[in-house]
Image (tube, rainbow, N blue to C red; front, side, top):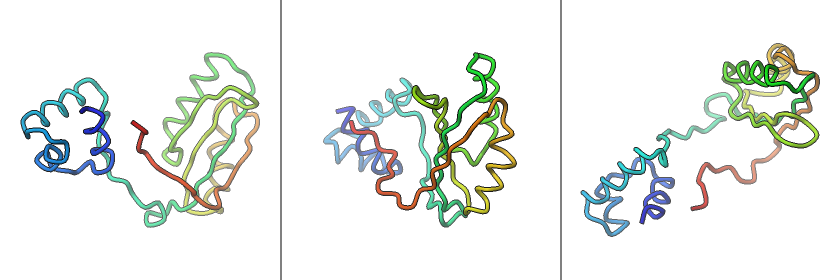
Length: 147
């Protein structure tokens, strides 16, 4: 039942409790309690409005591989702190393989990306090398988890 509730909420986070209860064949009180328990346990981390990037001047999606000049705990912490302060960066993942981090960023256009790269990204602590991949077409983009 919890998975059904979560699937419904991923599809429409603004669904009313009454409509959610009806769709999941629960009483409104039972539905409310289950959703509250999922929030309290941290399964539901929050709710958000999904924006159209092009309509808020963030049409260009960029992925960047980042190699640091050293791989120490302090270097990782300094880099992570700089990433956290950078609003253009939507996601940053430390990865295993031929580079240290994979960044997902959104900017207005290629000119804005060039400024972001030169003024912000390469100036972050420890950055030795970057490789940029501009997205030509988003084939699939979802925040729904397959549960």
